[in-house]
Image (cartoon, rainbow, N blue to C red; front, top):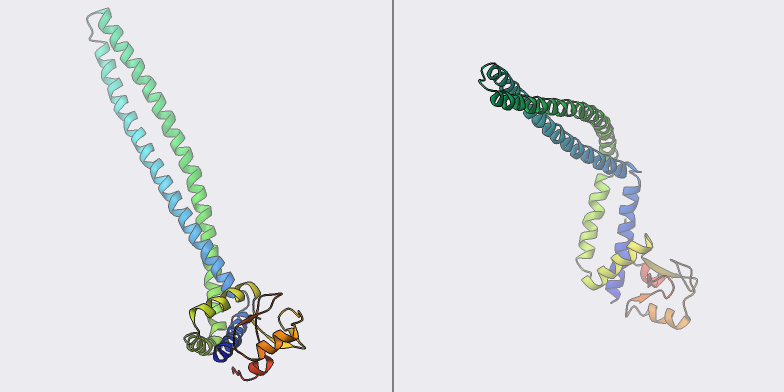
Length: 242
């Protein structure tokens, strides 16, 4: 168990080193991630808007074709109107002419509506594309800055990442899961030490009998106040991470 406690404390020190490396990059990773998300969202919106416009183009073209077909039909009806031989035929042709004229009127209105909606959608598309271009330029700039910053930290990050893999390989899944859970809730100080008979993570006083148990290094002890893993200061001094 003593070896496991040393490994857990060593893991915390390595994770803190990695935190320092990431902090040296400032907000750049978050900014880049946010810009990438915005770019992707705009890309989806632009794709949807283009499909929307295409649907109106198809509907407008169909309305236009239908208008032409009805206009040709209207012309034929008018020609027939002068060739009828009875009032009944005349009335029937007249009714067909009126129906066709109504259809042309309706389709012409649809055509104009489709044109107007397409115009609005095209303006919206132009705005989205302009916004996406701005985001793309900002993203390119921030990615370049992040690359430059990362150059100075890549070696350190690689070094500590490799050390972390080596350490975690020797920690059981049970204890590694416990460590991870605590770190998610408590941050940098996951494994605290005894400092002035108290937990160095929260400052809560540790009962003398518990301090004696902790210094035996025989089991995993959690602070009764903050839930952090506690190891003795003597054990912690044996762990070095450069």
